[in-house]
Image (cartoon, rainbow, N blue to C red; front, side):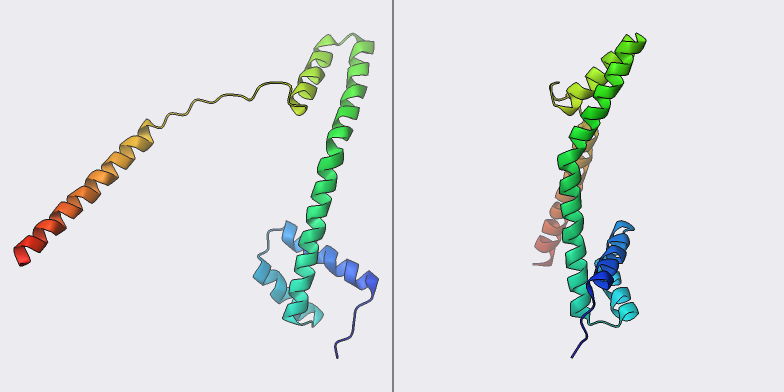
Length: 143
């Protein structure tokens, strides 16, 4: 029967796996390395990977939830310093950033030029049509 790891070791291992994920290592590679280095079953290594991914998702959700508050708080501090120092440009810049973060501006519109794509599609269709006509012609000759 496999020996269970203690909580400290388990947390250290999760941190290592999260680091591997952050460095962009593939899931297969992580499982292989972890399995060999820690002398654990492949199934257990996949469990570490799954738990590490879930933990990272929770961290991201937590950060998203509180990051806006932190940024707006820092902006309030900058705004106060701008008013106190008479730096009205700083105040306006901070106000613009806050408005963007809070979604107060309408979405930006972007023009896309797809004529090049249309021309490429037309050329491909012409090539395909030419091949189809050639194969049709070849079928009638062979019959």
